Length: 291
Image (cartoon, rainbow, N blue to C red; front, side, top):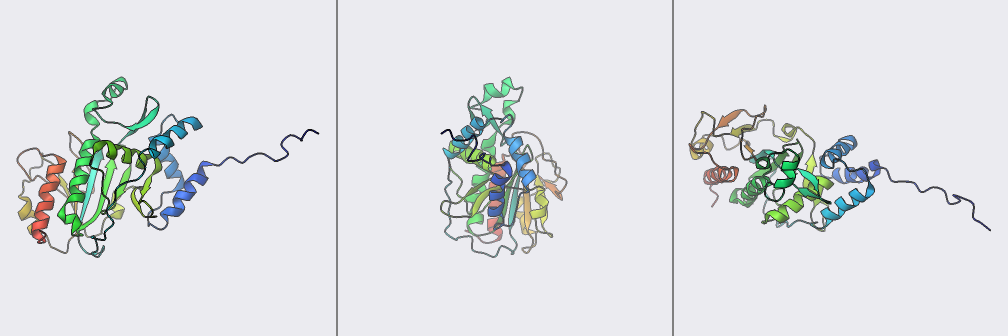
């Protein structure tokens, strides 16, 4: 006897909303929730041209190859989060994912020069290593280890806003860092191994909604006419004030953000973002007596 057609019924396909609903439920415990439609928009921007399940499977496989991130959860950041501190924001970070050959990769000028030229893009503008060095300098500083770092945000050239927890231990090698950023931009978050805490995640714009009301927002540019000595500058600021330092994580150009209240220059010479951050953290460490 032949079994009737579709006797077991049709298999229900999982919609994209179900996939994102799970992520949203996990976000409820962290305080920031991405709307379902916005998550879909971010995914579409990060994965242009993905129309087949095979491509999505390849993307998942590429991300899983470098899953996991070294973290330092030793509780050294034990100070009150509501107390004054320092916030760093990296603007125009070159963190863009594209499908190169058969896999998704984080674009950089060294490994993808031919790909970028074929697509009429300037290789000099794709420098994710600048963000890598800047993030390492911030998280490795005694200022952060003393619990003075309140938050670290990175906004990409495409407008994707990323939050990085202060106790994350970012990989030292660029290849490993690129793998972590690839996974983050595809999955929208990275959790600690064996824990539900999200160490890196994509959050909603604008960044100003996460800044304290009475914070002082300071931008840095070599072209600024206001040249200051960083030690004297931070010494003149009230200890109870939360300082927000905004940098450009690109090779050339100037950041233009309407929320910045003061643009300053801390050297008569052009400085890299990483060295500029080092000068700032050293000045703040001296002010707060951190050795």
